[in-house]
Image 1 (cartoon, one colour):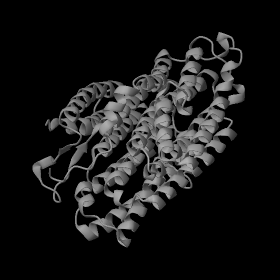
Image 2 (cartoon, helix red, strand yellow; image 1 turned 30 degrees about the horizontal axis):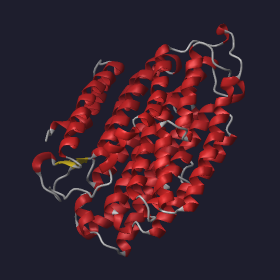
Image 3 (cartoon, helix red, strand yellow; image 1 turned 90 degrees about the horizontal axis):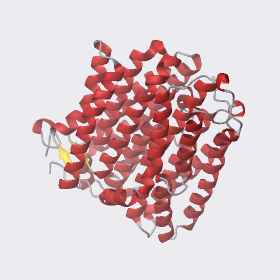
Image 4 (cartoon, helix red, strand yellow; image 1 turned 180 degrees about the vertical axis):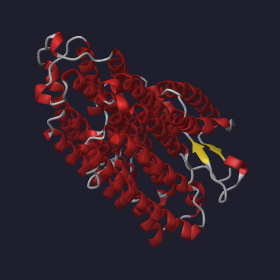
Length: 487
């Protein structure tokens, strides 16, 4: 087992961030070189997991649990790392055209914080230790706060401060839960704790506190209020990264806890509570998206609704149906959402540069490069809605099948109505595409690299649907018991 793989994946972007900030290394160069190195690491990691899986574990320094820390990876980790890689590199390429036009003075700080966020997300996707997860959450949040405030506009600074305070509150809740578990068992490794944890008041309180902290960071109702302003006021590449990956990584951590450490608590009542949170998020996020007058804000509110949909996996899982199919559908939705949501924000950014704003009533249809932008928006929206043959459709279809097999009819109705609501607010954003294209001289030119990246992410989210069979095989061992600590 290659010990260099997690080192490269975690510390590669971190080293690049340091070089960009302290040396004369260009941010674009550092991001692309880091991307190339990480691609090698991801391919190697995928090969290792396929050959030796379903779990791989590393113990830095050779210290055993509970003294030492561990990294771990399975098929879902690899898939999430790959999605993070695609969005991080795509956002970096998008920024090549976006930064000179929107915020040239903030370029150096942008690249440093961008790479720093990338490193923090990778560390969270490989962390096996509860305290390591806390450290990763804090590093990711601090970098995200800096990215949101880069424009230095009053509204952006206010949104960044709100995000900082809320995410700090979420971290405190999570850490309190960790402290309760450590006080009882004297260890923090997820696998070691999962082997000994039992029903009890203190353990139940720890599960509630840690879940609440992660719900805050995932921006689910009713602790969602920070997301629209933070994602809506941030620079476009930052909005894409936050909505596509940062929120998804926080859900990934929650998924890891409830499919491993807290699996003993995953009974009908807790699952229904988590499902109710998802339902409320679907309704609130969807209704707010319908009311928005700016394209970027529609996309921002849709994140709340879509991750509410993902939360339906919990009540579907405890139903007497195809539990594995529910988890695989959820994984597929998260991955397809990442690429589609990045494309939607990129498209909003392209249109904002072309028109000087993103007010829906004043946007016009596609001509020249804007035609490709609207095509990308339509493809990404189709995946978000769940139209065939997109990746979003496959994920939602698998989850719907699991609900039908488990006779969870209430949640079947919720999923169908949620898809209709999603289609309604996505169409609100897309309706401007049918308007006549303006004269070429009436719109500002959009850099070709921005259009190409926007279309790439949209096509990727749809292409996942055509790769459903191999992806199902790849994710087929996603839901597995945690590896024995020290094994």
